[in-house]
Image (cartoon, rainbow, N blue to C red):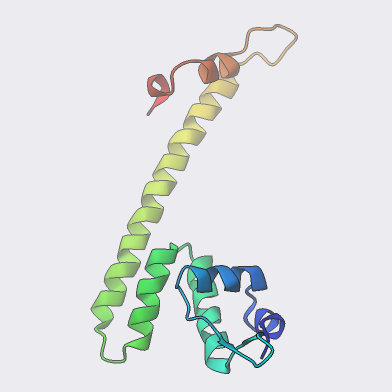
Length: 135
């Protein structure tokens, strides 16, 4: 299969496939006599795996680890679970950070008159040092 067909079958754009190859996340495809990339159905399956892992927010480094575990039939599922738990902890931290950002913005919006006056707590807050507004 050529890269266009693989992109359609896997749902991963050709540009992204080339990127994954360039960083070593997936093996470089074989080449035909005319120099075009040639992919197998196994590589399509791998790209689907990568795409699904990325859609769950796993970082490229973690996807590489997941691929290694996926390919290792003697792996311990505890290793996979630990990786997923670590990702959940990262997600929880991001959620907490987003909640703090939201609370700050809600407070600023409530303090802003939103009328014809030029004074604006939102702009004032943005103009002050970022360390003063950390929650």
